[in-house]
Image 1 (spheres, rainbow, N blue to C red):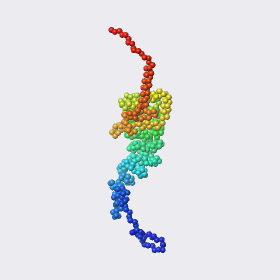
Image 2 (image 1 turned 60 degrees about the vertical axis):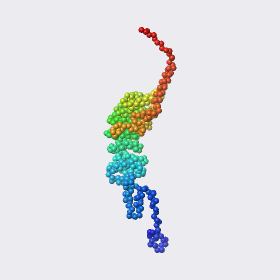
Image 3 (image 1 turned 90 degrees about the horizontal axis):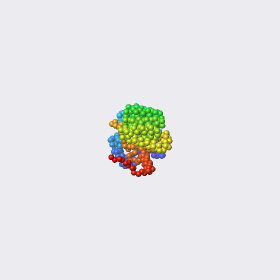
Length: 458
């Protein structure tokens, strides 16, 4: 037993005893705890509770033993914590490697750790370090854990500052990952702080940056004001269509113009769309010509009957003798679509006023048809043109065909689909022709056998 010097008596006149004997309870059985701790910690735990205190490891020695290869503390979470604590004294190459691997590990880390530990270090590395574009991927991953207000306060200022950077790698990374943060940007920020820097990409000598800049307009167009969208952007698109050396970029410009057509003003649509798509049909790059045809078909509800008859159909007819079969097929389908539209108005002139109102009142939300069903043409690493479908599973450029619906949207359907509106109209016209011929045959009087004239024989 051990001794205590505390006094337990209550009478102050009584002499205070020197010691009081207090027996201690026997030590608990710690063997049951071995089943409640990880197996990799059991050997180190046994060392900590060893009978000889001199042989027990110190706390630093214990942490060192657990951090060995295959130990309990040998994992990415602990390594990330330790690196973040010492990131200020790490070499630039080590920090670059750390940020490259961080993005893959964030999915396994706790949300609070990412928000309160990783995010401040990422922001500090961009503000005071030389991390550059390498932090964008982990930054946007951590941004998913933030609410709208926190995103506006912490992430948006960094993004705005990145757009003004002359670093090409950072600019192209921002354009490629714009879909992750575009919905957090308000219109004044886009028009005054982001769009003026983005349009410089149209003039860049690097084709990859020009290509990504064109693609980014699909996300920025809904937030652009009238001057930036109808004047500045159209000026750059016209230059790319006419002068760019890369065929895929000219094709993507035509595709993007068809997608953002509903966001343009009515006057800009009438002045730009027909001339732009007509210019594309004369492009030496075959996919650009096909994109021009699809652009006409996708935006047909923006054109009047006279424009369809006098401006669009003559252009499409010239492509029926194109040397590429894919372009010819798309041209024939688009011609049948416009002819069906004209025949419908011819049979029922009352629909002409309804179609005129549709042209004037078409809302921005109707632009999703062409936007979701088109493709991008890009250059792969070998310099060859490849097509990337916006919707996974769509066939290659030469395989799908289009069908124009009443609403004006385009759908890519398989060859086994049901009869289209054009087929039904053609069938109806054939039945009507047969019915008219049958009526004429009934009214025609029956005639006897023809008399042969007498001919003098030699």
